[in-house]
Image 1 (cartoon, rainbow, N blue to C red):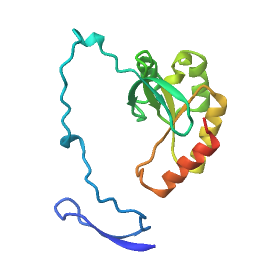
Image 2 (cartoon, one colour):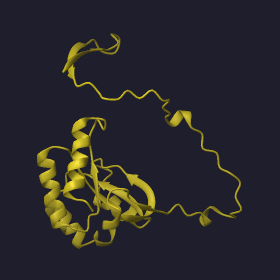
Image 3 (cartoon, rainbow, N blue to C red):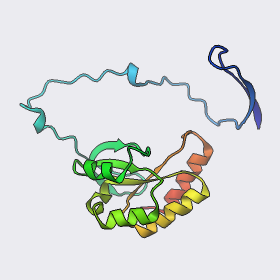
Image 4 (cartoon, one colour):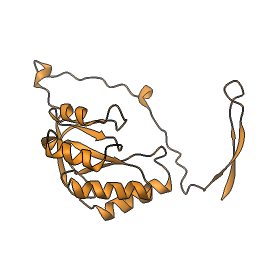
Length: 175
């Protein structure tokens, strides 16, 4: 365990703090790009209309070997976006909704047995990485077995705790 110094520009916020950290095993040196570095240019097409375009794709997932077909677009699992109502609308277009983690198991069951029955192939149940989150997820996946995707929501996707959570989920729910 080492120490890191965090310095913030004084015009924004004055802070100097010691933060414990674990040494990361790999330092990546290759170039990284973000949205401002990439230009997507359409190529010429023989299609006469945008209505002829299909963005549906079929994926076979590496670890579970499960196959999913739909539009690779995911609505975020935020409280006001990842709702049952949004999932019902997006499922008609074969798009995924990562449903927020604040619904109870009872609310999920009622939705899945009612208006959400046909939406289940296009929803992911969201969870955190704590043990209480895993317990709630287990309860949910047992009560609503038609849920086929999990969204693990963390602020720092590079943390070892997140990586371990993924390993644990794959072991516990392999499909």
